[in-house]
Image (cartoon, rainbow, N blue to C red; front, side, top):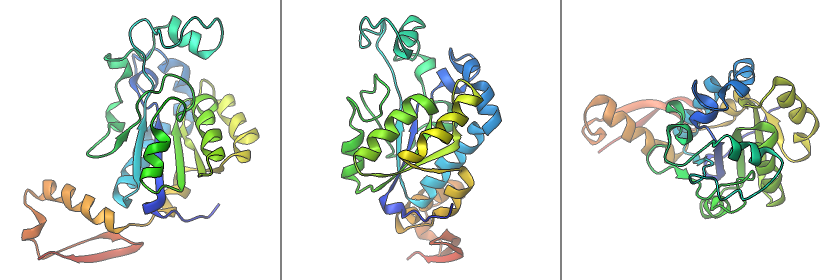
Length: 245
């Protein structure tokens, strides 16, 4: 499917790219590993993160975490949150709840606060972040496709955002579950897409120039103000000459 995303109105929301899911040693890693390998999730998601940064999109990281004892969950007797509590998963302040190395927030990227349930909006500041940054289009990636991603997608749709769900940048506890939710549910609430389509839909923006300038300054070991021109991709052109005084 062909579409175009305006970086100034687009947010990428990366849901629960934490060691508990993404990394060997995480309590839930073995459960999602088959889907991560089948869809190349941990290759695609970091590529999308870098593309979002370079294009000047709003970048939002949406972790889940609980205080020791998981009192936030209460005494629920069934469901996935009971499993999380019983397994003491995503305990705040532990390696398990940390962002994985390839998906760590940078600079002024947003980190959602207060997520102790399934939906990225419920009990958090996510909607405040999106509206405060004039976001109209929300691109969702992460875990679990048929749980937190789906719950966040449904609320985003009801909140009148245009929602994009990236199949090969998500994970689930089985390949079949991931295939099923995208095939049967997601078209009702989102535009189903993949990494390649999203990458090709994004063009640069003026905001990207500033981000590139900071990164390039570090790479070259000098402030770009001392350089006359530098060429890079922006606004869909192969090369653009940017002049610095």
